Length: 358
Picture 1 (cartoon, helix red, strand yellow):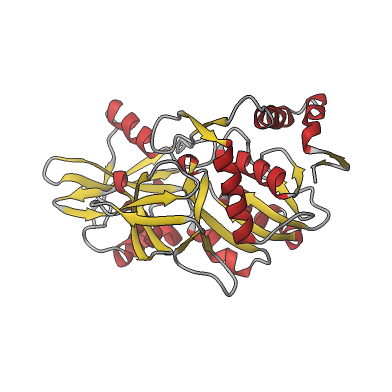
Picture 2: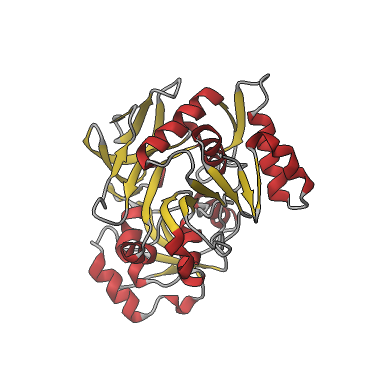
């Protein structure tokens, strides 16, 4: 087991050889290895993604990360002698955990730059690949012939678009999406997206207990975590092993006393728009908040036919009442839209939306 870079292979403990390359991503992997193999420290320092708050550093016990790595191995069934690919930045939890999974479970780890086209250089089979939805969509569009080499893909870091959801059932690799965060040491639940085991809900890993608080938000108890994790993710608990994700509590729009969930609205209308967008609430003098849609693109994005489709797909409370056209939707390094930052900038700059009349 060890690192594979091109046609070269080095042992994990020979990580210092990675510094010989001029590639910054290899130096970052070497730095993470140095931190991991440092026997004087029992923890790894990571940065949160900054999706819903300001990014922060967090210290995670190495022993807990080993347990998490073994939980993932148990679920996906790979083992010593199998090969995985690392095309995620190791400064975040997804990339770091793939590195630790390889070191602790006997995988050979192919290293490629963390970019959009991480499969472009594949010439042979690879058993396990963690990817962002954007990386998978790029592979579908530009490197579809490479997908034949991949056994299993674990998606994370951002939501899966409706377009990609429609494509995934026809792809050869077994594809899953994980649910988790830095604080839970990557995923604590997994949802199969294609094949005979495809499900509309998440399955928790062994050693994980889930419940909800009085707001309906997910509460996580796990053998490998010292403390209970209270999330802001609204879920529907099916049973002790399964839950359905609904949306984020801090995204809920209370419009005239009726609560609507932006993520549900986005899901319903995602097939109607071929541009990136999101839905959120903006202040309204009568209703408290009104549903608004934020589109990355020009004003012609919402045609009459699309508006008619929106009217058919949504109930009267979910209907967007205002649209904001933005040149670019700000995103985190992992590709998630920075909803709060975008909304705060709009308010701070007194940007007015365009009223939608139906």
